[in-house]
Image 1: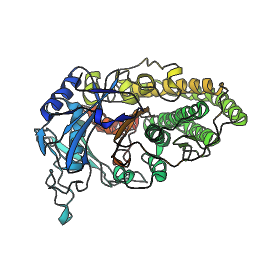
Image 2: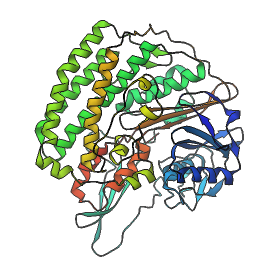
Image 3: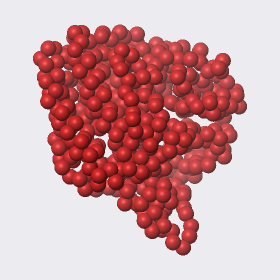
Image 4: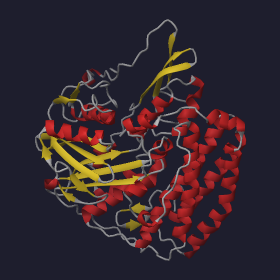
Length: 501
């Protein structure tokens, strides 16, 4: 373990303390860690002076970081452990470093790499040829392909789903995203610091608090800002309201996918009630503008406490009643049970996070393992159904709604009040690194910031839980009927834009 530096969630560390290993030692250290059950939080490349370096953030029951000088090409870690699969593809896409022997080496998104070197995937961007993407194929007289997207009805982001089928049976689903390439990470490195929270809140619009909180905590660590207890209470309540609203919306949508319309109508209305609670708490139904480095912009007074408490007391029995309709219906359970199963061993291999991981038996919850804000003082949740199918993912959501409701009620009973927020000019510590993790409603959200010797941001790395979990959706469709895709898809409900950074 001397090749790994132990860090804490939201702790500023001097970059000089991070081990810089020879690549062969770096590679073996990461593979040994993964073999022992550890998971990858972040694994990325960055430019420092004339050199490109690699940095890995790993987790077991603790957080660790290590790094190395990056060779232009290197022996793939994915060839040994699937946990590095998407990360190595992203490193190739962003910095032109090639993972030799990677079993699935192709682009994650459509854009030129940052280093100006030749594209490792064979794309010729000077000729506006963006699509050298070799899809996996299955051969056979009875095999056929079904392509969905990238253009979809409505306003959702582009994404392509390609099914290899025999009749209705899906052999393989390949998911290709990244058509828009929003360039969020590069933008976060180039704009004035006062604009960072506005960008963070739009990384994934349904995870405003999750991403905004990760960024605020990172900047607070780098700028030595203290947050008062009242602000921590407000932040924790906001994150739990975001969790409840999204889970309720998706449970209604799952009901709609199996043609059980009443719960969808009920939960559609009830979701709006929880969004209104976010507005009472912070002035925005989607949490915009509430969390800022140093505190929160809205003080929760007695009137807000009373409104939140009274409305939760009114809504909780309604939520329980609609859940009884869903989970008490034999026809719904027949469609949920044993559909879209991701086995525990597969979930562990790909690093599944959040409620999808917990539904497959992985107990990891960042609120428990790496608590921030008020979570160290709050009770953890227990998941009773962990068989990895749609029913398990739906059940975990149901449990989390009730657990989050209990957490909010505990926090509302506290007397701390947030101080009036005064924006400060941020001066970030030079030559530093900070990693923040929070349990967003989809799962582990992580931001990592590295500063140069002037205290300027030299690398800003964002990891949305969807980066791990899209592969889980692809696995869920194997050996399923293609008509089960909408149900499986909604049981994960992953983010296109959170992936396309």
